[in-house]
Length: 115
Length: 116
Image (cartoon, rainbow over all chains, first blue to last red; front, top):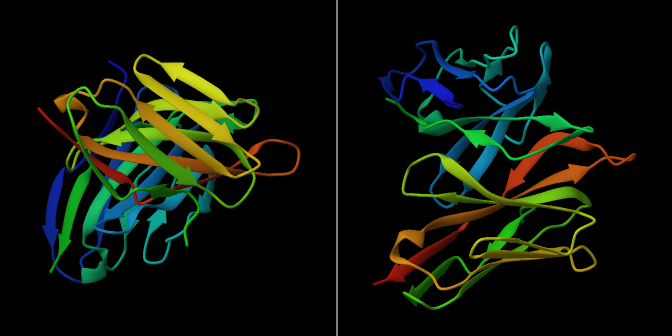
């Protein structure tokens, strides 16, 4: 089954404790992206990747890191989480065709609480 | 304000009625996409319309795109209670040469409630 998986689905942590949210897709998509969703603010893009070893900032990259060492994986790293990073996080992937991406497939989301 | 703003913010209708949601954006785009999200879950892609297209249909969905007005609309015909969800438009800005930036911007969404 074609899918995007995220782990963990729920996480409660404390300020400053490094964490990684994993994202994996099995569709051989070139494009992957991370979003956060907050009430009243919609979805905001954190980082995206057009291919292996190619990453770029979205609208809200501060406090986050990503890496794209393999095509299928795109982990989101919070080196020193803070309470304002409490949010619902989504990973997504898409096929690139002719320099343009197509529909994005979303993971189920990771609800992160930073105390 | 953000690229990709939906209007209205909330819409409440009866089953069987049509629902229309609008999206406005600011910069040139390569394509515009509509997504649906059921409460707290991942987004599901509904339809993609490219900048050289004006109208597209998929089942009960009809999307129009007016690049001169930088706006799009999503029409859901004969709505059902199961259509209750949040609907988002997403735009990718176009770079010179026609290819897309990887940056994708979502609006804040329209909350649609369909009463049985």
